[in-house]
Length: 526
Image (cartoon, rainbow, N blue to C red):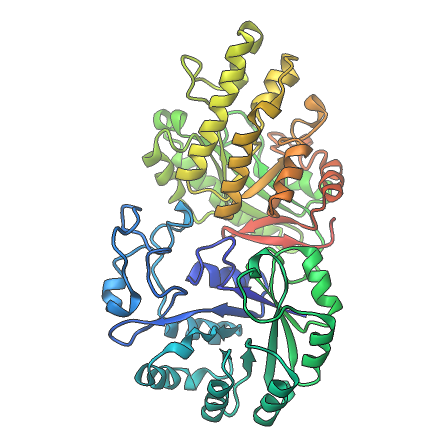
């Protein structure tokens, strides 16, 4: 079955942008679905809406006050806007792509492009220029039509192109399509009935309709986000499915990844990176990330930029030495990045990270603004402890909104000390709404949720606990990473077997690792 990425991998990246297209390539998708719009000066760009307002922002990050149509702007005028920061700060500075550049990207990398049917609304002049642009790329680009007459005209212009049809389906229509295109050059799409397709006007996929389509064309089913939907599409005989990225193409790779470890660069570790590498291999883990602490409060004073750069060089050397056995990923754990954003931003530009982990170790609460690992919670009033944890979750929300991160680390970390060390009973359900807001935000921004195993011995569970993981899953979350938070070799990938059993029981199908700040699926572990 062929997997197609809807507007690129748009559940993890800003839609119709180069980051979304690059992610599709890196994650193994064979086709990218995208939308093409045209500017006043006849420059073709990838954009879904007729206006830029939903996905464009000013350099300040603010929304546009007036409605701005893409057709009323020149391409140079469009370049004044940011098309990434609306999704998350990670993508600040992303510009709208020229479609010609996307065509070149597809040609160079051997990935196909499926152009949405909105091109049908182009004027005759626009369509002529557009078709001329497509001529050298018919081996990688294909058109989608919802109108039969338009498909017939386009097929006459492009006699070798593969076409897609997503309009009404009937025997009469399919027979007409068969007079224009052979079966091997046509894919007919049926919508799967789910919340993502509630707006469609054509009839949904059914066994009868799927069997009819397959007599005349390949069958595509759109748009899917859950594994049970994928199973239904497979049962219908789908040749191709479209997803925003929640479902990944299969891979034969079977391995384990630890996305949260520390070395001697961290203030609380003396571990050499190679020692951690050898310990990970001994545990059966052949991918791990070195994510040393960079707490902006401390680093403002200590200025530990140089050690992080040195660690990055060490990682490069180890990857050469262990090329056939392991992959060491270069990362950083940004703590309290919103306290001193200029410090965090400088740290994030030091090296080309594979992953950025975000955490809060110090909470903005009254005079207790030092590390919660050092707070004597047993000396505090219960109400103070309750308020402190409430403030902690507020800081997590602020961090997600303001700091460029890939993974949210140890979501319930203060409980490791409050409950685990000081044995204070605390009903975490009182924070249910804030936790739900946190989960909703990371899902929207394509940020992964870490299952941190470092608390397993102390709390007899993970950070966050399984009930929160189950809530994340129920809300549509799927990006799960494992992190041992190991500061010494003995804790490398510790308790990962228990963690995998727990997340498998919830319903997760895969865990992920990050490379070049793109989530990569690990298949076959769960």
